Image (spheres, helix red, strand yellow):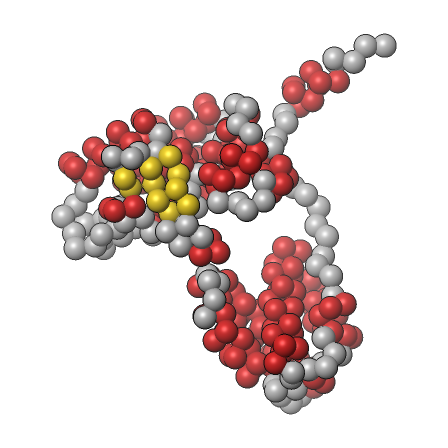
Length: 290
């Protein structure tokens, strides 16, 4: 079985599972890039069974050092190619799974940007577009991913029970997020008096399209960030990150934060969302007496 044919078969298998569309597209792209490199390396369509460990190592070295990919991007490629080889092994197309000997690359941990509560207020005030401001408020006070937020329907926001229902979130998982009182008031006002009369059942809708794009929101966020004088790179994901970090700083236990965010393992919260600034570190050290 050649790589491209195996990749197409793998895609059909992924479609039958709860694998997200984004992951499917990413895996297909990465597997096709791998196939292009191997076919060029051998100057012919190569069979998966003929790929050696040296071939695989050469490819990932090529991505990192010749194409200049980041460690995170190379690790995505490793994951996609590994998935392909595991699939081929189960199908009996290969006897030697070379990807068993390829480890993901270690990367230096860089603490992600998040906004303080004061910065969040300044950002929201700096947004001129009323619908963008409401979406940002929703992201900041619910912790939803931008895709989850923009996929909300009118039925997903339950004002009687004061919850937001996330249907088919990342990994195909559903979850229920409590609706903060102040946010509920803003959303109800929008639904009843400001939302345009469109055929779409999207909760957040522009009159022209019946929806709103994440690119549009990120573009307006960049403008508002500069206007507010915030010296940080702020995106939709920064708002989710800030939501979680704020909960942790206010003493919310990590399993609860993880559940609100839709993480299956609360250790993810520890590694990503727990921040300590320099003043807190200094205070901790000064507790020690000599």
